[in-house]
Image (cartoon, rainbow, N blue to C red; front, side, top):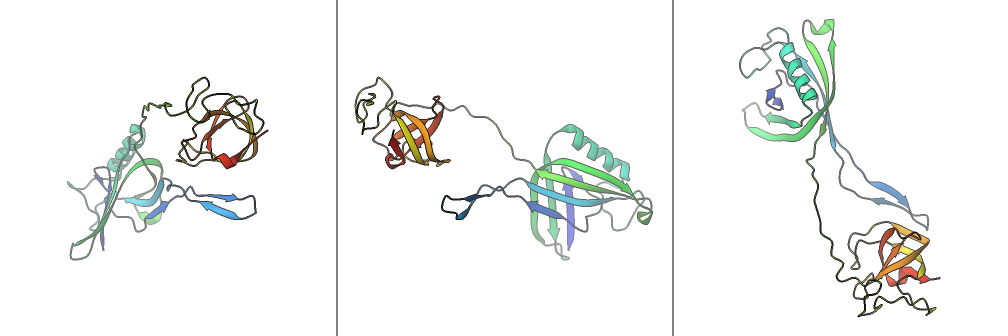
Length: 237
């Protein structure tokens, strides 16, 4: 089977005899209050790629070049540009059967993390470069506008909770109530984006939306926001 290795637009003269691709994970193990252990499955981490690249200083019949022979220095200069340029590039592997029929490709945007150059008498005049690449993911920032029009706030009437402080009622939870939280926090009052758990946590209620499945928004004692919880997750103190 024939292989073509590309680093950006640079065709490697000799395909490595071995290629290692490691797909990293970010799963997290947690121990529940009853002692059971669970695994929180998260999005895969960045892929690591490593291989040794032979760079001939003399012509070999098994080496391939896009436009005639180039010695090892040419490829070392290209690697230096990739490293110092601080920009990602495409790592491509083409795989072909002896009849030249394509099998499948590997095409990943990567950064050149590190490389080492070795000279060994057993390799004659040729160099061997050990390369480590890491998958690169494009990223950017977004500006989001958050509307709290459906949330009951202090001093705003209407609906259950009505924005009033019900601290005079020993059984009813209102805005400003001190509560004990036993449950999972969520991003909104409809239960989306479940987050961290709180157990016997003392906090305060600052918003109420009885239309939602998670009607109470709780904060830290100093007012730092935590998230929305179900009615059964809070107990007034």
